[in-house]
Image 1 (cartoon, rainbow, N blue to C red):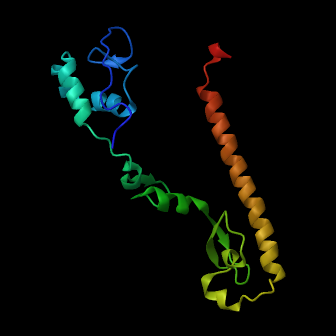
Image 2 (image 1 turned 180 degrees about the horizontal axis):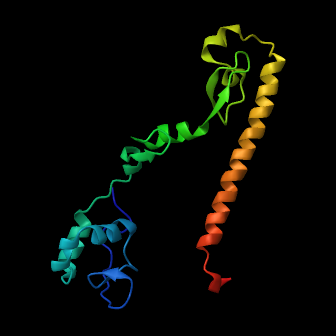
Image 3 (image 1 turned 135 degrees about the vertical axis):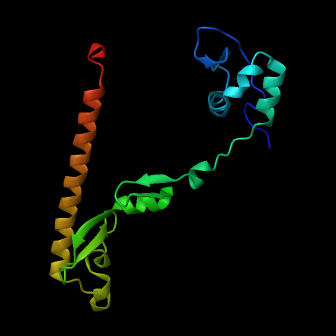
Length: 166
């Protein structure tokens, strides 16, 4: 299986973006990362033949995102990407039937999402009015949460903006 730039053309320039005199213009992301992460390559960076051989041997792990751990600020623990996304999809809410606290998903508007698991057996084909009211209130709360997040993000963008470029 061939890679797109298994043996890239190595260009030596000073004063351009690069590492150890090697320009980043002709290199792929993985090769740039290899040069940046491994400082011991500076001893052999002046020999293009050896550097090409190392780039040819170097294989990137394109599936690293599946194994990478991310910090969950809510639970203060490390999690993989998929469980982290699911945990941030949940919003604290109260059961429409009993008032007990539950975690409801932002993307799920089925009756089970608004009822505590102990009361799922009471659900039938006909949906009670309290569940419908709870779903409407939940939708409004989710919109408010998303709008607040959007405002915080825009505020962050504005604070980081360079006034000379405006």
